[in-house]
Length: 330
Ligand SMILES: Nc1nc2c(ncn2[C@@H]2O[C@H](COP(=O)(O)OP(=O)(O)OP(=O)(O)O)[C@@H](O)[C@H]2O)c(=O)[nH]1
Image 1: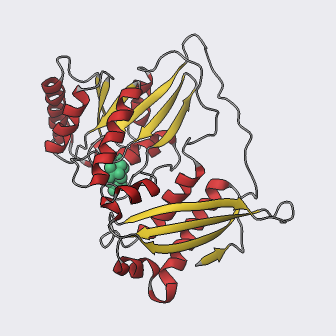
Image 2 (image 1 turned 180 degrees about the vertical axis):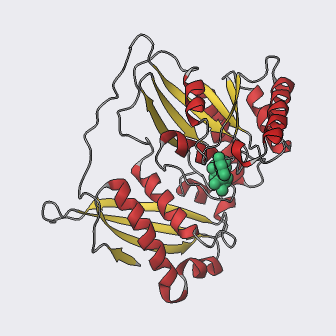
Image 3 (image 1 turned 45 degrees about the horizontal axis):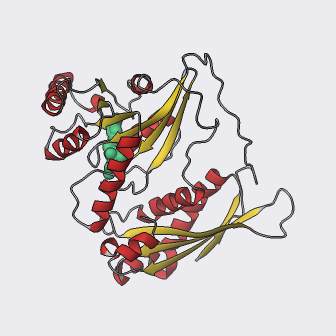
């Protein structure tokens, strides 16, 4: 299934030269890494997107859509905060789950501060306790973030903040390093979250050039865009059964200047033939829509016209097969 653009809107071939952000005062400028954790659906990706100001991670109403560690970078006059968005922390049920948790714990030890998202629209439960216990094992300071704060009544928010305080004290003598309510979609206190997280970073020059939104390889970003497009409207049928691999991104040879074209070859893996039929749709109609939607995002990301070549393949039970997982980049 192929799909070439006929009406490009992006700047062709527009890779922006990299410059480092302006440092207001090198004596006090801070830079470092923060990791955002929380149970599935806690609002982690939405918070990262609000902090960074550009969509870098996938959000959806369904748990566990973020399979890769995606970093967003917040540049402030006084600090650079590099955010690591983690997959939904959960008790491992499949091998994929185990790998995700290993990935999360490994990441926590390497960052300067952890943001622990606890959604205000839900009571603190066993999933949050599980994460709090996991955090006991790392010495990184933990900032509790009461997400979705403006989706509930003030009385409920207060109750939630008290419960968070208790959760913190149950797991560490001094409790959480800070507790901040935020509502990412309602633009409430997003700046405060950035400021509090930055206060835990060491004095350091900026780590990444300006304009760089993520240090994930382009392949991963492209795969995420295709995955998001392929799940659109069929999340109930295929929530976790879909993996995307970008086989190749290469410039089409012999294109005239200003009309550059990137060939992008992508494989969508599903677990069963029935799922393949869902992704492709009648007469390939759905896959065409997936291609059109994904291509628009890829062109915006890469800043050039794209020829997207999409294939759907069946990889039986890929979630439980270590070899398949490795091949799919987990
Ligand atoms: N109204 C409102 N909705 C929010 C807010 N934050 C998150 N949501 C919604 O909550 C749902 C889950 O948010 P995500 O950001 O995808 O959650 P996540 O923690 O990244 O989820 P996983 O990737 O499954 O771990 C989405 O439907 C969001 O739109 C908020 O501040 N206000």
